[in-house]
Amino acid sequence: MMKKSLLYLIMAMMAAFVACEKEETEVEIDEGEQSDIVEITDATTELEGQMKGTLRAGKTYTVTGDLIVPEGEEIVAEAGVTLIFQVPADGIGYEITNHGSFISLGTEQNPNLLSVPADMRTDENIFAGLWGGIQCSDKAEALVLKWTRMEYLGGEGGPGTPRAGRIRYGIWTLSDQTEVIMENSWVYGTKDDFWRPVGGKIHIVGNTFEYCGEDGGDVINVKGGTVGNIAYNVVIGSATNAFKPSDDGESTIQTNIGIYNNTIINGGHRRAGLNRGSNINFENGARGFAYNNILVNNKNGIRILEDADIANIDYDHTLYYGIAQEMVDQFLPQDAASVERPNDIKGGPGENDPMFVKYDVTQFTYEEYLSGEEQPHHMNRMKNNGVTYDLRLANGSPAIGAGTTDFSPVSVSFTLTGERGPTMMAPSVDLGAYPTSGTGNRHN
Image 1 (cartoon, rainbow, N blue to C red):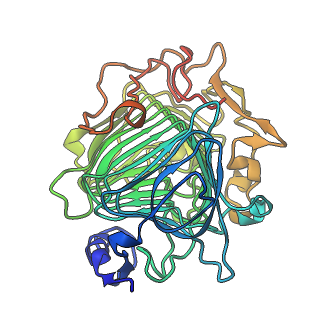
Image 2: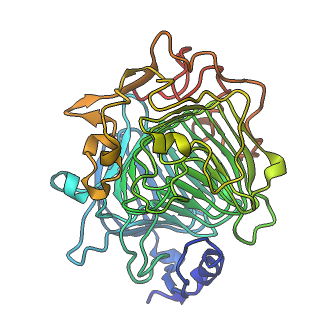
């Protein structure tokens, strides 16, 4: 018999402090006995229940039920691994529930894929939440995603899972000691937030985020006790914010996030309300900085709320571009404490085109940005008619040489090392995710 525990009572209590979250309820989670753990072998093709071991390079596995990493154990995916999550008849997709460590070590030549059957990877299913993402308990030690693509995430959680009866985030972490390394990976299509870290040590570098959030939700919605860096990422078509540091919660560790050299495009327009959709948003006691970012055709600019730790927040060297006066008027959000910075690049509608190599910043009308579910698909993803956008900076771009390197990334003490550990990237004097030195984002 499988025993039941109240492990996620703690998780529910912590989540009650999360802004905009509905009242949490206790959920009994089936943890299983140690004897229930299945060792993954070379003969394994299906994944379900409590498992540990190594997913072998180049193999495809079918996830036929919730996959659980037990406390103190790990699952490691070698390069070129594919996980296909079956979609059950009740529509409540399976998830990875992580009490230990889930390590995905794709490479540039052989990336890993976490997805659904090929015939379900359609435009109609972008926000369907066909599988439940990676839900980490407060016991989780680590989550590592390198050169890993995750798509069609979210949906309602099933009985006995961390977010039973509620929409799941693509990733959920609940401990300020959980280490999360995400490098050179892709996310496509989430129902709500892609990741809500309620604490943790984070390193989010060189990733591409497309179509995150249906009519609400952030890419990374940071809560209390979270410390780390978000750099060299591309965000296109987020529903609300790209990155929202907050210190909500009970952790004794103050949220401190460094956000630098990111390129954020077409964000915030699917979320109704003037005070939503700020792309970089510091609030509720959080500290940190934002430098060297490019913000193009977003609903709002960098938003610093009065309840943030304003004395310990700095932001500057940002290039703003907007096609419409309504966008320009919100470069400094009207409801925020954000102020003019001396080295920002901003002007009127259509001024200061960042001059991407292959992306027309004027291709959409303001009315299309406001069209909700009718937005053109290529407004929110990195391809149009099979052609991939290139967000490198062309010669003559005003973003070249406009940044600063006179700062250090937020210091984080990781225990993860080697191929599992972070590859820290120094800031670049060029703005955005693609400096002319060739460092930064490596996706195109």
